[in-house]
Length: 109
Image 1 (cartoon, helix red, strand yellow):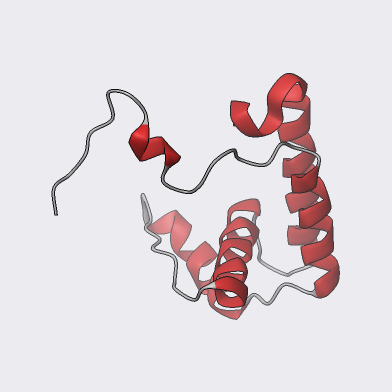
Image 2 (cartoon, helix red, strand yellow; image 1 turned 90 degrees about the vertical axis):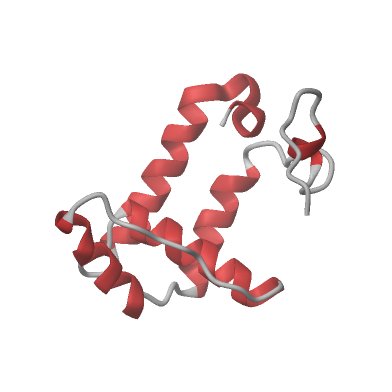
């Protein structure tokens, strides 16, 4: 969160949450978490393929997963989320930078 939000910190994160709430409100039964999961899956579908692995802490979260199965974000939804995310900083380096940090645990193949 800190590397994305930078000096704007908490207020930028809250702005993203408000955006996700607005999108969720347009989709019956959707929560902020459901919209976030649908966004990640859509990004995977549009770029490299793959899927998300989700779990539930207890049965109260099962409804979110049922909603996720049928949730299709619109172009407008994606635009709003993209605009909120673009107000933050892009990650530096490539996707493996975290594994290369000094003291990181490296798992042998």
